[in-house]
Length: 183
Image (cartoon, rainbow, N blue to C red; front, side):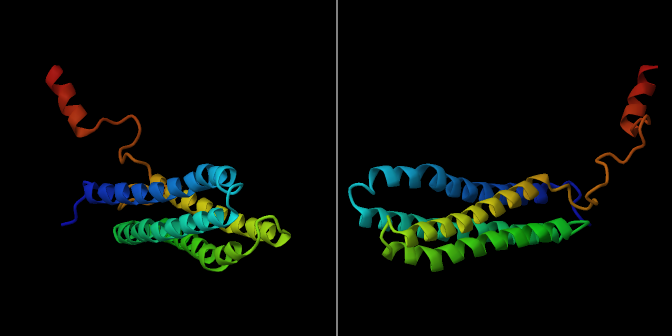
């Protein structure tokens, strides 16, 4: 008989949400804290060190994206096995795959060019815009996947079915028994 407590799904949900949240937090931390500080503090002293630092940080973020995104991808697939409607689970899996693909493209195609291009050049600025688009797209996709994972309904119930199965105004059996004992 199937476990209807929802406990296994809740554990999987916690793992998926933690993996996506950690990955998203790392991406946001780099974009909004690390990269701007490195540009202010390291680039004026050594442009080559700044380029190396940024490229290595993005490589590490991509590697951790594979780890955390892969965990979330696998867990979302496992969670879809017990779902009444797999549609949103599969959408979430696709969104995670898009985030991983965007991060991979940026890491393998854009970052190597940025490493070898002078920072002040027009070509570097164009590469930075392209990198920002792909990196931002990966962040948005990870954020969307996180929101979808957090908003997922209990297993075994359609997405739009209400949480209670009793009609409004009727007492549950336990409430009925309690009322009889008081009388």
